[in-house]
Length: 249
Image (tube, rainbow, N blue to C red; front, side, top):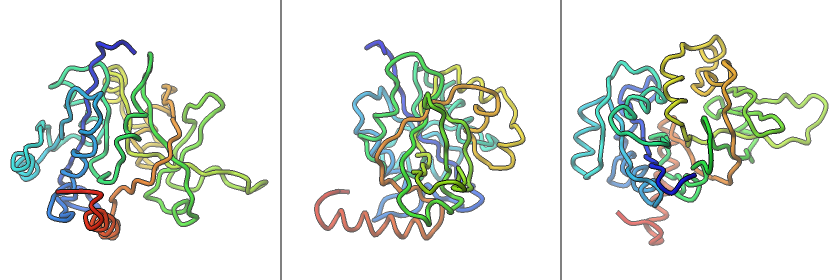
């Protein structure tokens, strides 16, 4: 990767989530969740800019209140990847790193590992699953890769199925990805395939059409906030960090 390469981080933040409306504005210790995500990601020195891509005036108002750079995108955009594409039309760059807006505990050192070092199409982080409950939890997207480290399939079900052996380490995808402009353009211009429609997993659009999605294994204990129960768990973690002086507001 050339030193002149411009890398921008986009945090998609949609207001009208079907499972958790207004999730990016959820209160975590007196700050909206998106504030925590932006603060963590902004600690990566490689980024030329970190922007929140939103579709709602309430989120835009919160960004203005806390001084967070943001980009307004259409509320009709159906996926987070296409929201990143819309943001890319407003902020030119060579590499676009996407960090989901529900990752308030994400470690900047983990985010940095998705940054490519050469030519690439798209990269997604994954991390080992250590809990049986997480393996069967449909909110955790499981992934299997081939011998070259590229994704073969992703599912909300436990894959692969341990019929002949229990000697296997399950992996789940982490909501941190790097896209080339070509990858974002392809995703935006290509309709959903049947597997993506069934599983409701954006990254299957690349896999179904034979596009290379490189997977990189990292050690990450980040918890994505998919439900109010997740939010309470993350709140307790952040309260503990504030009490110990490991985090500040």
